[in-house]
Length: 325
Ligand SMILES: [Zn+2]
Image (tube, rainbow, N blue to C red; front, side, top):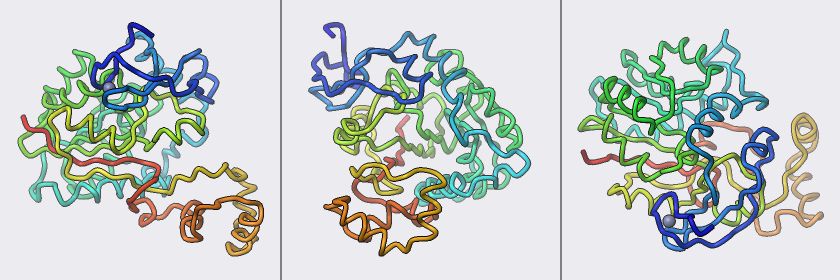
């Protein structure tokens, strides 16, 4: 631990929090015997040792998404194959809309574009706008190609990737959806965006909202950093950024144990009225601190308004900001 320094602020002091427990077998194998620690200075929760950069890059382009249920898009109907993903992408776009230029924008870039739902949602505003997707995962390429996005593989932060994206820019919108928490150097990740921004650029960011209580009570996604509102704000301020928007959004995150999954839950929900399920849950001592409205929110089927809802203890942190050049 003595060689450890905080990934975000470089501080050498940290405090152990818990073991690092990714549940997906390939992820657990890739991150063996790690711990999560909290920086004493900026309070960012993070992994105690990062793997070598080259191995991490290989991990993201090969095994990262392998075996994740529901990942593969239904290409014939893509991007309309997933109501949930599309609604979520549109809700992210709506957050940025007040800050976007009304004119036809320069190209839109998504770093770590995945399947491209976010890019598509932004192009709904600007039909002629060209899209650039930075994504190294081969399984994503067919979907991105169907959008007509130019694909630039590799990881943001690698000099040749940053150079190539710099040449493809500048961009008016840069989307970072669930990528920052995978970065070994989140401060540099944000500051380097200068390379691809125009004078009127807006950056739209989403990361999981994982305060310490969540990190200590749940298994972990294969992330290097675990943000909550205060630590994301500290990071952005450390990059000279005052966010235009910074809040948690989406479904309510509950500390209550997970309910039955998949089809059993769907059948129970379809057959048993909410009031009965609530009474049973209360009888069994579940959700003692939550109101009926909050419990309904946990169990609700994804809808646009539900994905746009902001406030404390929601699943995702979203920020909209400009970076002065
Ligand atoms: Zn720190």
